[in-house]
Length: 138
Image (cartoon, rainbow, N blue to C red; front, top):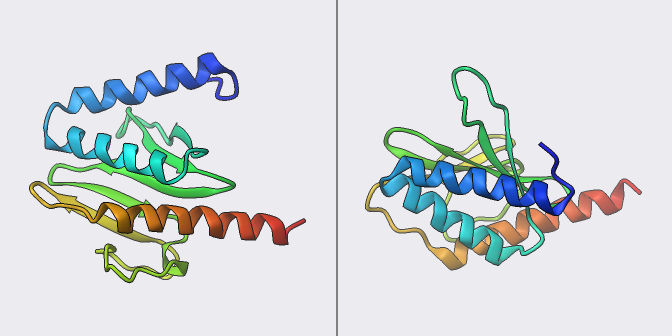
């Protein structure tokens, strides 16, 4: 799918909208809300659907800005945001529910609320970290 032209972005957006609608439950509502918060935190964020395969024909929603910021995945009991460089991000609000040496994730289950301001701070910090890495490589 072409990503750089306006039509490619629009069709990708429709594909993501359709996936959210297809869920038809709290997970779709949460993914839609997270998507809005990510776009508010970083208006220049790029959305893509990657890694389609027979076991996951819808693929994985990926947000990036000068590199990957996070993925959005749907599971039976949760919506998960996995930050590519999460271990390098400060998390004073303790949003991360899964730690790793590189990635960290936020699992959101039905009925749970997310600290929207803290999530936006994480998104901005991840984009800033990517920008710093981009500037160093020049």
